[in-house]
Image 1 (cartoon, one colour):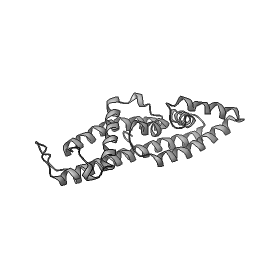
Image 2 (cartoon, one colour):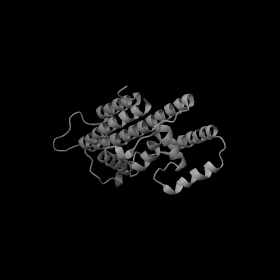
Image 3 (cartoon, helix red, strand yellow):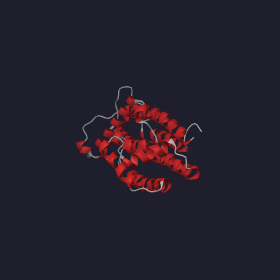
Length: 214
């Protein structure tokens, strides 16, 4: 499996959004009507929503696969170890203070097998809540969504991560400002190129997620 089915759906959806919301031919001078600019803003918001949904869905898929494998074999995988680690660090793997919870829990455990099941059950409930509360694709969002699935963010293209972070910021400005307050210039081709470049990075991310499910 080269890609997850969810990634194939994302790629198709982004292609449809480009066709429906952006000019068929981009202006070489950047001259667009106000309607075309509004459509470009809509494209930005919808593309962001699709990317966010993809990341949430595919991370959940990886974790559910790992949990199912663990229940059958009782053998930990990279995803299971990451999942438990993030649970112990309050879903923020870079918060060292939260690690003290590991010691407190360990003192009250009697059976390793029962403890593992208890932890994974609690972690599953909490992770589901994390997904419900998630709103964005910025680095802080990825830490809580992808790291528990076993993704090492430091191994990803850092320029791509920065671009994704910037995209999340742009989406926020567009979503939370009324038209009268929107002062930024927007260019349909720039929006298309941005999403196209982000999709290239998502292609590499998806391959890593496929590997985690292997």
